[in-house]
Amino acid sequence: SHKNYASVLSKEWNIFTFLRNPMERLFSLYNHWRTWTDEEIDNSTVPKHVKDVQKLARTLTLPKLLCLRHKLVRFMFHNGMAKNLVANATGDVLSDVEKMSEEKMIKKAKKRLDKMFMVGIVEKFEESMFLLQYLMRWPYETNIQSLNAREYSPDTEGWSTEDRLLIEKSVALDREIYDYGKKLFEKKYYSTLARAINVHNNATNSSLLRSLSFKKEKQKISFVHIPKCAG
Image (cartoon, rainbow, N blue to C red; front, side, top):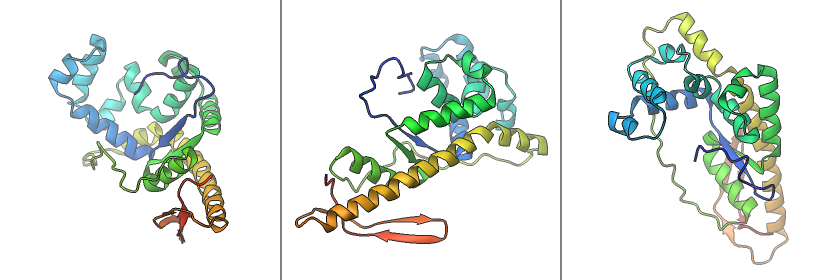
């Protein structure tokens, strides 16, 4: 759900999130807006001014869409990952987040990630799901499907230098958040694997998971015989 959870969940809940490559996220969001039908938009419960901009968006190139001043476009398409982290954590409304300085927004978003039970990475989906299942002591499922996923790349022909600069600016803060989140993920992933391997080596009848490999920069490290949710 895209609902705000700050006022609903207690501190006892384990909250995690998945971060996605900011440019891929932007392209996917743009494509999602383009594929809405009139019926889907008309039957939604959003205000009319939102429906109007949703219909308009289908006729625009990505650079043209980014130039719209509509508050929902500003929130979703301009560093929307950072803004969603801040808004969902603090309960701030769109206008409050839009008024924040970039420095304050980055600081709040990173602080939110620091408090997460786990930060996953969409581009490391398999490794992220292993980590989540292990931390939650869930039975390990090897055939996890990535649903509602489709490849999409916008037609960049005709984009000017100004267009490209606008797009880069629209993901600048998200890139910083994404890189920060990847470091958090790798740190927890490797420490968890080390703990899992240690538990397995000290166990006599551990259930074994299939081999996983995780590539970090140019070095490929393979882990085998990892215990199943041992604790």
